[in-house]
Length: 119
Image (cartoon, rainbow, N blue to C red; front, top):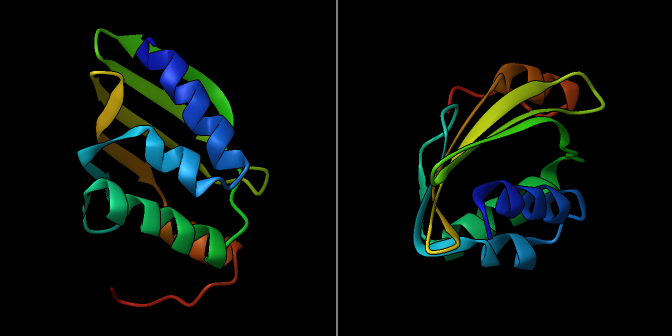
């Protein structure tokens, strides 16, 4: 599968809150770094990150654009509540090995009525 196809599958799994399907898209040694948080290392930890995130908030990813350049894909997204962001995905051997996401954490917390902490 091409990187754009993998990201399309990622969006589908994300919107179904399917942590199993999401985890299967990642390499065992993957790193997911949402820059508002510390990097999450390893497929099992990434799976738990998604489970925790879906338990805390109703998240939806609406695709604005998916770009591909060699073994990288870039996802520009928004959600129905007005949050916007983008993610960069490095794909190797058909799996996500590295992901970096940019979004406004303060807006996310406020939109979802979650506590604002200094973490």
